[in-house]
Image (cartoon, rainbow, N blue to C red; front, side, top):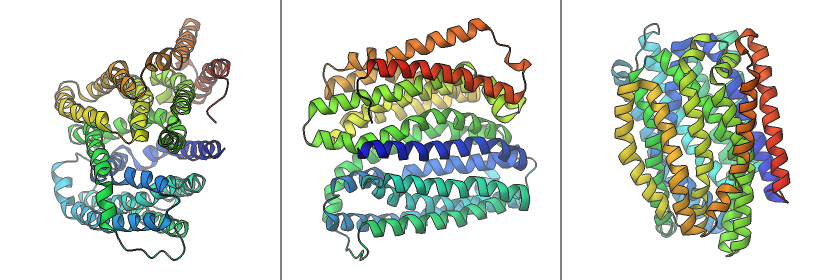
Length: 490
């Protein structure tokens, strides 16, 4: 029953954060201008690159919090030692970005209309925001592991409102200076940290007095190294295109690229609420050696996500230019990002399905295959991506993103399934994923036969029409889901 409430809470939280961010983005582009928004996009990239310093600690904290839920004394010591370990990294990051801001402004970002001092000061502030948010994510990991998912998602909704909506009101009605925007975000980040830290301390007991235990840290090191290596490898791979393109493109084009990536990333957000709620349950079933229950739960989770992800991915890919225009009202962006979104969102949809094989390994506490995958991926992917971007720019990055996740879907999923759940791969592929692929393909084919002239309608009418067609597609997939699944995941 708790899984049901956690899924609902995660979905509401993720949906709100995603929706607010997506709906507000065109207004940021309008009121800040393309270059200033490009600076916000640069900040987003730096925030994501901060995951390189995660080194597997935050996933480990979440797992240990779930495992030690009934041993609060040991859990307190675990959290305390991680706090001591991360604080110096946080300070080094904040002041490191501060002192490198001049070089980044001079030698990395390409801008024409923004004032040099505004860009430099904004980058200085970025370092402190990124470091504070990252440190606070440790406490979010603890609360997620303790299954305070309703509280965490309520917290995310409030914080997202201040980060996005209140910030937009600040830009529109008070001051549209980009430096003022980042100063405001710094204040919000401090409030975020204080709130989530206080909640964690209360969850662990009001008298939160614990000494760090380095013996506990040694016990966690194998899992930290496994998840840390894969986190660094994966982050390097998925952020390398944005890092390279932040220098390859001017700030205006870079802003367009990140807008396309954010929209494609919405696909993953639809699956996250289910997978976040599934992990503790999968870990629990695996620890009890309930293989039958584990396999059933895994397959139901796959069906639930596939039923939702596949139609959304297809609609966004096949109607990419229409979606971009109806969302932003910017025809230049719609034309520029059409081909990029088409392939990027297909790759992201496959990534949402590919991630299930990682959850099997995570729940089993055996990440050897995941480490291998994330060793090969950056070794091959980073130099390949560097060559492709120089050859074909942002469009090449989108092609490569799709190719990697399509190859993973066809090859790597079977390898992992055969190792951890032998004999289940083809049921997973043909019974849990293929039906929704066929229904969605039939819908897209039917919509194309109708031959709708989207651009003969207004921006709002195009948006409504896309929603209408998407709902038809989704409802047909939902009917297949309930017909083929006797008991839903939740």
